[in-house]
Image (cartoon, rainbow, N blue to C red; front, top):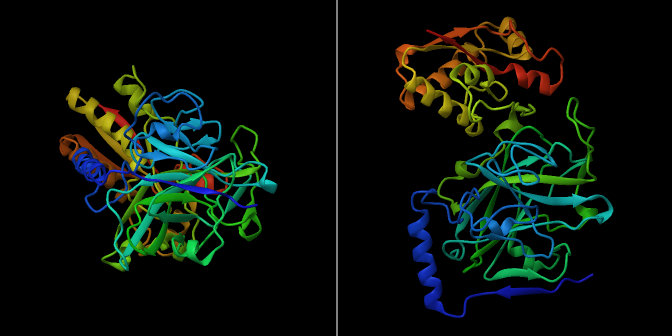
Length: 403
């Protein structure tokens, strides 16, 4: 089956220049100066988001096929809500919104979907660019796949009907780039970076994200349902997408995404209900707020900062309160520490996690004299099983309020 592609472009060169100037003005504060992707985390919007298939509500984004990608937002109701929606549960990697696309369906029963963006400026011939975006496999996906690709073109793609976009010619493949190690992305409950290096052929100004490879050449894993997660699995690989970046590659380390793979660990960061619901008292905010961490990490994840912003505001508004931060390890981290009390990978890791939270609150204006930290190692396990999810629930910092 052949797909007819149409290219869309501006007829007036001056119109291109004017739009680029406006774009730079509007996004100068909102995004990294190096990033050529407009509205990279889907935050700016036009119109009202009410249903699935409305990716075009996100300014500067659309889908080139008849089957449109989805947009989710924390300030919208079902079916477009976040973190919970019909495909699972995931907080945005950055901001309040993220997109969703179909990367694969069993026996091609459902068309794939794609994301398309007009870059701020055309790419320069023979220059290397880092392409990076973050993905999270939805909880109810029955499959996980590889072949995360990006296609660059001088003009926007336009496909008639709800067909997949498959590139097989050598010419098209020159403009397509795949994830650097082309791994299968099977992690749920977490965002993972997809990285690739692209050498521009010259003047490309459109980026399209998706799977451009035939099903027979796409590797997949069939996944078991997640324990303790309600809902029926869907016979496809559905991924959330957030924070898309394209920038000139000046340092090779800027485009490396395999640190976690080299460590040979499964990256899982747990999420729970947030403390930022309207009407919560400061006591209730503290009760619901827990910050979770990645394996052997004290790095504060972006999607954990929303609760901390609320707590910082409440503490500043209620100066009579102080707070204790209780740092915890999971069982495997605790075992590793007992085997080698001087192991730098886990030494004082629970305290370092609490210190990360404290540093963020202080940065937000809370007097550090009002914040104490305590170490609990792995003595208080809330996830009592041995699954990755159980361990993820235990890598945490909890809060205790005091007057």
